[in-house]
Image 1 (cartoon, helix red, strand yellow):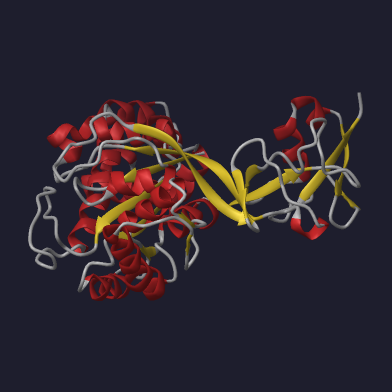
Image 2: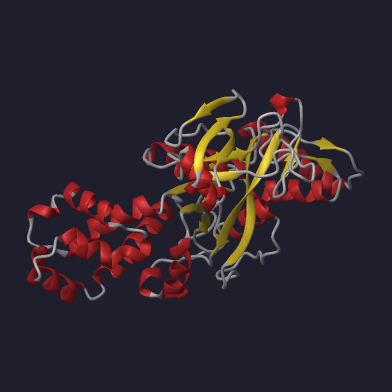
Length: 397
């Protein structure tokens, strides 16, 4: 799974990325600071599965803080997109291509309206961030359309001559973006394009189809960044009302980054996604003032900085993944004494057999049964696992 961070230049995208991962990325307030895509690991936050057993997890990957377990997720941050990106403006074609592998997109916008459409600084509240939501969707739609249009005339004529079902030709053309034949057939029927000859499909038809594919294969949420700027909260409320079809999460990437850096330097105790922090170190006057602002204007106002909520929402709500843990009835430790050391993020409808294959091909091929460690009850291979399940797989030789 790969989560992509997208947005126009200077909206706080790289700050959001660094706050999520503490990766060393360039952060500056000018266009195209990020030229090559940055890869790093972020973390989704789930309840520690060992707590009901009176224990604390010791993960091989990720970490545990208090009652929470943080599970690693691969993230990519690409350079800021500008209008006309699908035509190659601002190196847009390259940047869009970098997103090809992403399973879900987090669109970071400057909800304070202090950056114009080209990523240039303007007076706060002087630019309407609603434009950014529409702009990015349009760029992505036309990117998909460009791929669909590539050799389309030749492809459509060939399909017509060979009496090939239109959905097969479309799926072949769009397979690189995760479009399969079932999806192609379903979306073509939904748009009633199956009632028209393939050669009669218009550019409007193709654009509508491209948009349908984009929505499915690149699910997206909006991170309404810089919500702590005076007046930005009203913008956020307005966007929620104007775009009810979108998940919009208010956040302050700068506040989250400040808290994580302060915790890293042992100045505070802080768990990502929480509504408070504790001061444990000696603060300078400037540091104390900054933390006071974050506590009063961000945490007290919104309940958190929003960064952790954005990532959790992308993984668990958009992509509908669920955490599943391997374990044994009466034995949660591995050979090195680590308690519930592994966590696998599985798709929503993953079954016990899917989990067996995830652990090892031989477990899947020789599956006998699975046991729910919490209930000690056996489950069949076709049983859809509940989020947070601890499962013991029994397989033959």
